[in-house]
Length: 107
Image (cartoon, rainbow, N blue to C red; front, side):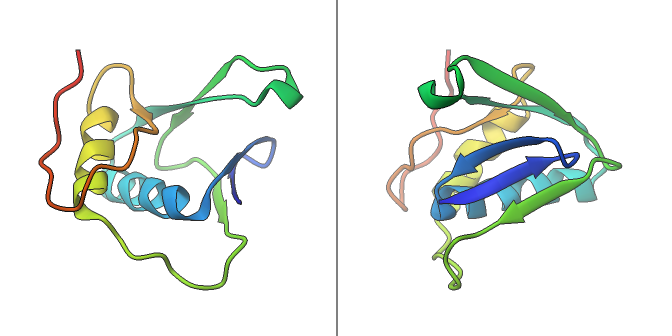
């Protein structure tokens, strides 16, 4: 389990493979100067609920991985995550699609 840390205070655990894909989408948007919200569901052990942070080029982000090897990247998952990042609701984790599957619009 990796960790995503926002501005040194807000943290959540995300599986290393998923965190790699989130990092790729976030860094692509930030390189283009595109701010966006990022939301996740909190574990019941920390009270449950949902957290949303506003990510912008000046944000302090840390991606901390448990494993030492870079996971293989699934281009379809990158596209699915990027699709959510470009909606008003912002980036959120979606299930990993098969490698050859085109992203499907959510309602």
